[in-house]
Amino acid sequence: MDKIKVGILGSTGSVGQRYVNMLKDHPWFEVRALSASSASVGKKYREASKWVLDVDMPTSAAEMSVIAADGNALRKEGVELVFSALPSDVAKVVEKEIVDGGFTVVADTSAHRMDADVPLLIPEVNSQHLEALTKQRQKKKGIIVTGPNCTTIGLAMSLKPIQQEYGLRRVLVSTMQALSGAGFFGVPSMAIVDNLIPYIRNEEEKVASELLKILGDYHGEFKNSNIKVGASCHRVAVLDGHTEAVFLETSRAASPEDVASSMKAFKGEPQILKLPSAPTVPIIVRGEPDRPQPRLDRLSGTPERAKGMATVVGRIRREEALENGIKYIVLSHNTIRGAAGNAILIAELLKAKGMI
Ligand code: NAP
Image (cartoon, rainbow, N blue to C red; front, side, top):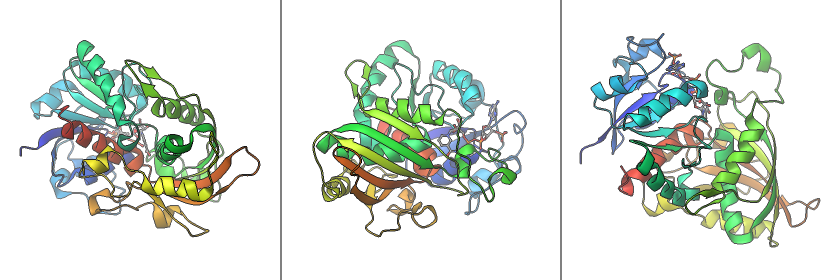
């Protein structure tokens, strides 16, 4: 089978490096172009990227020359599918131009997440939202699918089985988010060592609005879920892995054991279709009183290609202060499941369904 030729926008950044690593030896995709800002264009990838992953930079990427973030440069390299990990303000313009140029774009950025015809996708949770591409194809030369904010992904994954089986009335979440979520230059070390920062700009609004779109329906147009959502978002001195304390009210009463069973049994299209980057078990439920922990659990997931793709839940218990109250802790790897890995899984789903 010929591999689909892909390009990565923002390839030198925190998320971009994850793409480069996750796409090496991918069975369906072949990286043909690495793009970054004008300060990096023309340099070898090994010179342009300040590599921060604890695995070696793939040799196939190291000697590639970084190209500009535009359709002509991508077309010259034969690129068909574009992953975007650009800063959102840049993405607003660039992603549109690239879709207008006829490419398929899968974006981690917030630029087009809430657009009326753009799916905001977690493949296990709302793959039926891909129906929106029919409308897109009538208007656009290319297509675009987005992935949610890194904080929303683990939360939505853990909520989906509960919503399906018991209904959800109210969700409150308090987050402890890793530094890599802010990009390599995002949080100065002097601000975070011996500290936490109880504010992340625009994050709480994104969690609420994105969650309602993801857990809502699509019938010719998106209709938000009517769950009441409240979020408080915080940056903590953890390198990778967002941990969240979730409090919720179900519509029908459910015990902690019921909730744990529904999470353990949960599977989505990626598992049914056996996509290459799909975790065999999408939600891992741990029974220990002190798990999940980011350092110990963020790389959960099998097979090897899906490490960091599983969402890990623990401490599921009753919350007596709420009606039909349940609370738990959820953890997911923000640059793998929360960004590059989710986008790669979206692309695999598009391919498996014959949509690209
Ligand atoms: P980052 O580490 O700051 O990387 C930004 C990348 O964009 C770099 O490759 C940079 O290239 C490139 N870039 C900057 N300005 C550009 C321009 N004008 N034209 C072309 N390329 C440009 O950011 P990140 O954390 O990887 O995040 C990337 C995107 O993913 C953001 O939209 C973010 O909100 C989203 N996201 C991040 C996470 C996460 O956990 N980090 C999770 C989900 C979504 P240079 O190296 O040349 O500057």
